[in-house]
Image 1 (cartoon, rainbow, N blue to C red):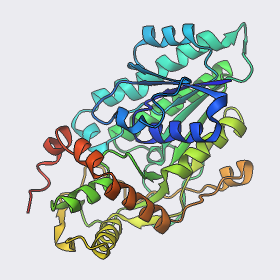
Image 2 (cartoon, rainbow, N blue to C red):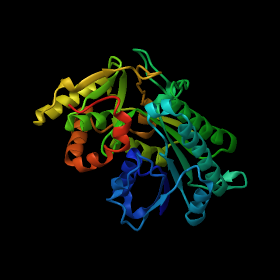
Image 3 (cartoon, one colour):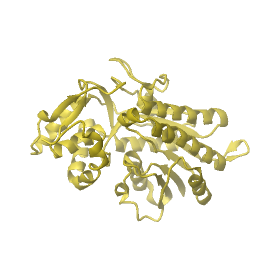
Image 4 (cartoon, rainbow, N blue to C red):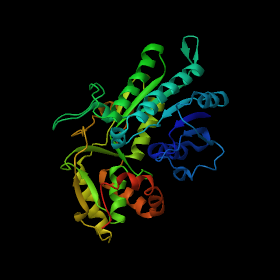
Length: 351
């Protein structure tokens, strides 16, 4: 039985990944999920697995070496998948400190504990691997041409992306220095179920359903590449099982869209479904500080070496995503209040 330690498993991508690996091989794995349960962590995301005997949830912080050591004492961890991170750029601009603590120091604490329990003399025990989940934002901003490759120089522009880039370099250093079995994955923008509605796509859906203005930074023409979270989870699984130790793998969706295109597309789909929404909800607001203009990933390496390519087109993935949020409005109402509403009050008012 393979034992996974999933950090940040109650968040968006982490909870989708846990469901993915249970659907793939339910009887052959043990999953330990450690999550601090910040505003973006939600155990409702994991109702489908919470009663399984081979699933364990532990509330804890990856910066807490004592709780991590207790986990390693009680379980023979084979694979760490580090999803735990503060991830919202706006929040990092207002207060970088928590991003430095969780994303950098938390990652280093995980590395030290796993090295302690996995290393025997100068060698690591066979079958162990540390997967660092990163982002295309560490590469910085692209112009109109070109793509990020694994050899693109790191050039982060926000406290969030700088903290992720720093964590990546620390993970790489543990491979270079100790030959620790690691991989780093850098993914383009994810979308899908269970995403906290401070992120663009669920924010648009939530605001449309509640007739609130939709804030669009600057001229709305910043470009992002989009990948459905199910495809991301499949790619991570391939890296865990087939990735060459020490390698970085970019995971892209080949779906470059301007932010305002996404907004208008969602409005049009919801309108076709009979909702009373229009582009009048769009409000252009002051641009984000240090706002990267374009991200685009070259996924040739993971395609050629591991056989990965996205299975969902953008249109199919978006329709699937919209259906999920429409069918789970109670979930959206629950998470789309409180902290979220207070934070975004400056951007919109109810019509």
